[in-house]
Amino acid sequence: FLLLAFTLGLTIPWVHEAKAEMKPNLAILPFFIQRGEDPGRGAICPICKRVYGSGEILPGSQNALTRLFQQKMEAIGTFKVLPLEKMEEALSQRVKKEFEEKLIPSSIKLGKELSVNFIIVGYLFRFEERIGSAIGATKPASVAFDVHLFRTRDGMEVWKGVFDETQRPLSENLFKIGSFFRRKASWLAAEELAGVGMDEMLKRLPVAHELEEK
Image (tube, helix red, strand yellow):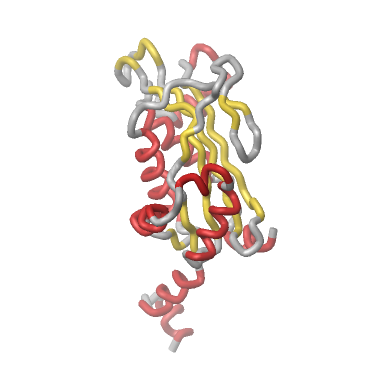
C-alpha cells in the first residue's frame, strides 16, 4: 500500500504527522537587550564576547524581533518550534535575576523542563529606524543582533548566527551589488532589514541531524 501510495503521489496524513513528530523540538527565548556601558567601546555579547557598535534600541523592537525570528524558524521547517505563548508562560514563572546571573545554565534547565531538544538565546544590540522613505533616506536603518543555539541534552552550543549592518547605498560598495538587490534595491525599515538578515543567517543553519551529532 505504501509503495503504491508513494508511486501515485498520494498524500497519507499519518505519514506527514509522523515526519513532523521526528523533528527535534526547539524553544526560542525572547531576545535580551544588551547595551554597551561605554558607547565608545560598543556592546559586547555575553556569550561569544563579540563587540557590536552600540546604538539606539527602539521601544518594542525586542518583541518585534522575537516574533519575526519565531516566524522564520517555523517557516524553514527544521524544528518543531514551541509556541511563543508557552515560552512566555514558562518564563513568567521564573525569577528574572536567575537568568540575568546564570543565563546559559538557566536556559538549558528551562529547555529540559519544556522537553525540547534545542533552545535559542539571542541578544539585541542595536535597532535604529531609518529616517526617510524607501526611495530616499536621510538616515538608514541599522540593526545588530545575534542568536546562539544550544543542545539541551549536554548544554553544547551547536550554532551561532550574527547580523550587524547599517544599510549603505550601492554607490559606496559596487562589490556588494548582490546584497543591494537582496535588500530590494531600496532603503529598508529596521524590521525589514532584520528580516533580510535572518534569512541570510538561517541559510547557514545546519540540518537537524548535524546539530544532533556535533
